[in-house]
Length: 367
Image (cartoon, rainbow, N blue to C red; front, side):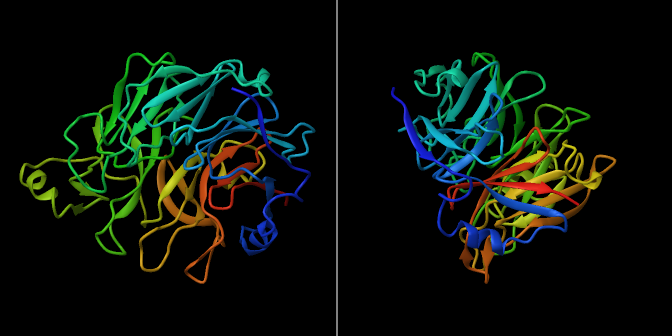
């Protein structure tokens, strides 16, 4: 596999010519600023930190995995390498001990010593190829937890169905070598973002609600795994109290109970990446709070989402759900960007990937 240098970026001048117009449309709280960190990163999805100055990112439809390099530490990427290409929906990336892990539907791939091999990327090691092959909700968000295990969701292979096999509609975890797979959470339709509480170490995750129950239901969800094996409702129950018209009645008669969401999010906002902010750059009111990238609705009669939101916690329970950055959606139907993932940088700034525009933004705070 040879090197492909996808683009060379000079400051903020060589990205999409409309990117400056996008920045001018975005509204942030007072004291915050947003700029383009990297352009020319087509269909960019999940991001993860590698060696200093290196951000790795997956894509979905582009089939590529990127290394985005800030060589001079000026917080603007200089070079974007293509680590691999022609992969199947390689949206998920994780990093451990100098190796890059990539989730590509049924396979988890590992690129060893990747930081030293950007100009000659290694062939991947197949960690496991035992995940389902369905493409519907088959793309992955992956991350290593505080237990040093790799967490891998398996979406439902449909909009609404009872998949039958236990592996579907779950969040799983495996050892770094791919062995020892176990299910952490059931009834999860399609999670494409999760993080661990910085104090308790417990898993929190976003989940995308089902389609075709109307514009205003069901809500998407922010959930919390307080013990392994909990069931979060799919396909029987959505949100806190919406029984599915096709699958809910039997579960309701049987008296089945499910874990309700910690926070109901907007209907069809498509929450993807989420993270607990633990940096020192942002004001104290944002520390240990949850930032969510809402990718935006695709089939609602009036679009919704296309923003960054914050769920604020008090005593580890949500007390508010508010917009943090808006403007990627204009006049209810003009889409200027679709946020996917969030990544906290070592200085406390925040990166946001946008697969619609093919750019990565950087958010800073300066009072």
